[in-house]
Image 1 (spheres, one colour):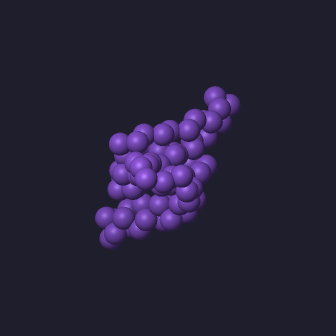
Image 2 (cartoon, one colour):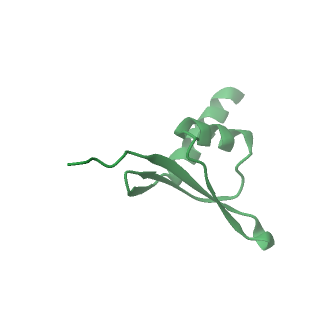
Image 3 (cartoon, helix red, strand yellow):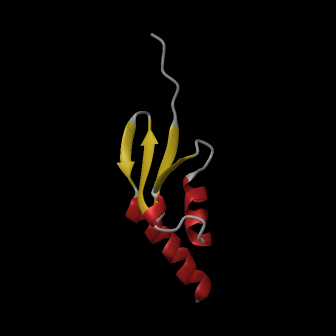
Length: 77
């Protein structure tokens, strides 16, 4: 039996207001990379973040935003 390759990526939905909504799908970006982009402000007005792994979708929006906010709070202290 042949096994399917394993894959994992994040989908970040960003709201640009009147300009519309964009789904950013970058198979190269890691969880840490998404958090770094949230911290830096590169990802603003995030509507939703999904983690797709082996065909299963997990909503990680609040989890990753909370992590980014915790890092920022630690840096400010």
